[in-house]
Image 1 (cartoon, helix red, strand yellow):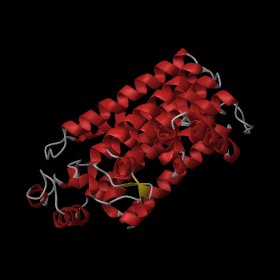
Image 2 (cartoon, rainbow, N blue to C red; image 1 turned 180 degrees about the horizontal axis):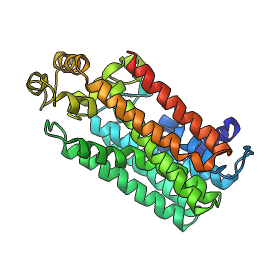
Image 3 (cartoon, one colour; image 1 turned 90 degrees about the vertical axis):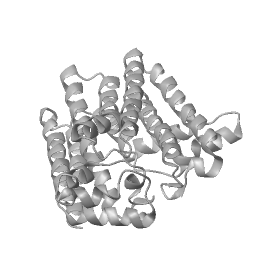
Image 4 (tube, rainbow, N blue to C red; image 1 turned 180 degrees about the vertical axis):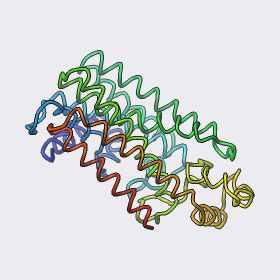
Length: 319
């Protein structure tokens, strides 16, 4: 896996290299900043859904992993513009360094390169990736429609994160299975794992935004509150006796002291713990989805990822 991810890293850099040195620099910015590469890791692992031991992944699997990661990176460029973010992965965000227009165009470039690679892997992969990009946009639009909405529903929250996060993780697994020509039932199983993992991943990420420090996150903490993105712990808190105090703060842009006051209200209640329980449920669903793959390398590696996420939930609960 480590060697295959190194191959992904090299192909990522090659995929955004152009005759224009400036475009290459901007498009490479977050690639060079590093990252966990969860999505390409899932693509590679999923490709071994019918064998007990891993071997070097086929080139097509590596390129499928690259296409998925390029979509993720392109979405980060666009997200940072919408959030007016100053940092990403402990480095300057693209928009902070080069401006919003260049960040948007570079994000578009990354999505175009992802689509080009997907097309080389066949019409099914190309169609799947195109549909996934559309779902990312739909999820983000739903979130924007609910910005500063203290009446946001739990169902709207789930619908949004299913599009903006879970869809790409499900696709990462599905592309691995498709390119490896696995039986359709196994491909569907891998897709279910990715979707459930993605739902848990986003709930945990939203919790960490409230309980972590700037240094731990590599970006400003509590930023969801500032941007009017009211996530599951906040929605649960708005169902408690503390709702009136929280509503009096929310509904508009927050100054730093207002953000901290809102965080304190959420942290003092049971919203975090209730959200953690939802994350646990999605994590266990992800792990359970791997049962048909028992004995394969995919089950072992993806199962380890699910276990790590469950441990992350436990760590967040202990804060």
